[in-house]
Image 1 (cartoon, one colour):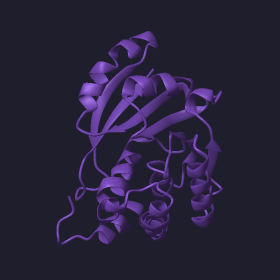
Image 2: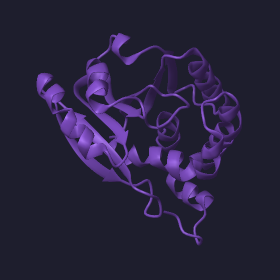
Image 3: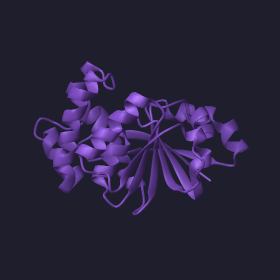
Amino acid sequence: MADAARTDDEVADEVFGDGASAIRQYVDILTNRGVEWGLMGPKEAPRIWERHIFNSAAISSLVPEGCRVADVGSGAGLPGIPLAIARPDLEITLLEPLLRRSNFLSEVIQELELGDRVTVIRGRAEDLKSDAFDIVTARAVAKLATLVGWTKGLLGPKGELLALKGASAEEELEGAQKVLRKYRLTGEVLVVRAHPDTEVTHVVRITR
């Protein structure tokens, strides 16, 4: 966790580089309009950087350059929007079934001027007929066993699912073994950080 000597703004400058201004704008949107729209709880504002922004950006190190990424159940845009800001080389699709949330995402993408490389689709992962994504991300969407079933059709021949989980990552991976065997997939738990001064993010990586 960032100590008193390093503010969230200082860490954000290092994590997001040229995108630092955009990520601050996004944080402002989340803590104001996001709360008003019911996409973020009002108690989340004081911990928005550590709990949501840096937690999401931590997966950047797991995504190869130039990938096509689908963020499933994107909600308020986590982890997809922080990832898009940190990694301008990526082409990202935010997939969200609920109208209010997909409208929010479309507004945010327009305001942050990310429309050249970020697309919003209103729909469910299991209904999107595509196997063209290199990486599929998900955060706080569903239990891993369910998530695998929903997203397997989105993965390209060498595609990976990166599911952001908490301390339950190992337990969820164990509980998903039957589903993984059914679809001939393998999984592992990875612990990553957006920056040495941020908390760890637990990620379950599922591969073919």
